[in-house]
Amino acid sequence: MIQINYNDPRPIYEKVKDGLRRLILSGALPPDSRLPSVRELAMSLSINPNTIQRAYRELESEGCIVSVPGKGSFVARDGGAREQRKRELTEKLHAIIREFDALGVPREELIALLKEGKE
Amino acid sequence: MIQINYNDPRPIYEKVKDGLRRLILSGALPPDSRLPSVRELAMSLSINPNTIQRAYRELESEGCIVSVPGKGSFVARDGGAREQRKRELTEKLHAIIREFDALGVPREELIALLKEGKE
DNA sequence: CTAACTGTACTAATCGGATTAATACAGTTG
DNA sequence: CAACTGTATTAATCCGATTAGTACAGTTAG
Image 1 (cartoon, chains in turn orange, yellow, red, purple):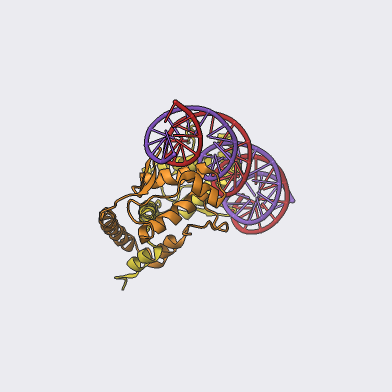
Image 2 (cartoon, each protein chain N blue to C red):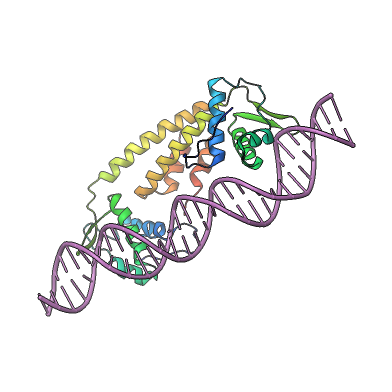
């Protein structure tokens, strides 16, 4: 399903979150489809169930998935909310860029900032 | 000069930085005035000189003060107002990047956004 | 009702990076 | 030279984040 890169220094639960988010946003895991259970995924990745639990909890708080005790965890129905949020963020980003420009901060500096701390 | 609140859980060097920045931005320490030496301040606060050194180093990188080996450390001409604004903006930018990450927007897309409209 | 699944809550152990300390080096000044 | 300055480097410490262990609670199929 997903695989963990152990050269990546970030915490495991972050990597799990990223992997799942990718699958969800790409459509490989369609809305309402069921995710592996906490224990299943933990077993298949050879890590502690609580670590998966944490990933699921945070994905839920982001609105990415929905978990139901006793039943399982499912991909949320998004319905374009994501794209709208993205537009809002883009507008904010532009405003900030304009201010940086006003201060005379070179774009290269911002780009460097953007590149740090990605997978 | 300044006093350290030990209920505040933040690292000492951060508290020292804050205290000094306050004095500088408020005008209590005017531009070009001399700060206590690393060892003086360390002594008076009963903490390790290296901790003060770190505070000074970071304040310098923020443009707040200027240090000269053998001579001392001095409040910068513009009080670091510009650099401070830049720091605030950078913090905001980070917050936005985090949100984009959460949405699964690839960094490349943001970088492209940054590059457009730069003359 | 029971068994075998699900997710969840809580506490304790571990680990790693941030913070602090110790020490030595180098520049300025009188 | 002596007595100050700031700086660099390494080692010790500390603390919060991460992970693990364990027990609890809801759902469903037989």
